[in-house]
Amino acid sequence: MRDADADAGGSTNCGDSQGDHSCLGGADTAAAPAGGAPPPHASGPGRDATSVARGPGMRPHVFTLSVPFPTPLEAEIALGSLAPDAEPHQRVVGKNLAVSGRILAVRWEAEDCRLLRISVINFLDHLSLVVQTVQHFGPPISR
Image (cartoon, rainbow, N blue to C red; front, side, top):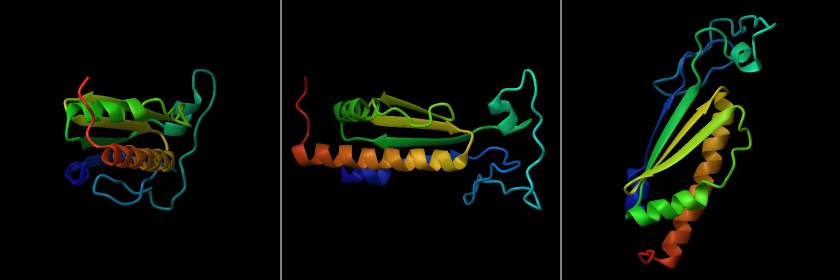
């Protein structure tokens, strides 16, 4: 499983950072506007909280992670162990897990990069526990 951990890849896209939704660091990251003051948000009929918070033209922050496993069965076991964990901030952070062959693919979308970071860190903690458990008990027996 050590090879799987070394091959894991992730990417992030912080979108258009306007107002107070800026992510720090990374090549795909844009900085907040000069002065740091967020643009005023209009509210009123037909405007929900998400559209007001995002502002015109803002895209959500996206992070994807691909985790290779030695076998497709181990990837399915990881999916079965990780999928039941509901996202604490379901309304503002979306998480999608899928298995393709021996690859576990995870995709997050969030309005707030801080909540995205927290979600990814919590997922990685759970993933680490799943990987350690599979290593401890050995390779699964085919069904």
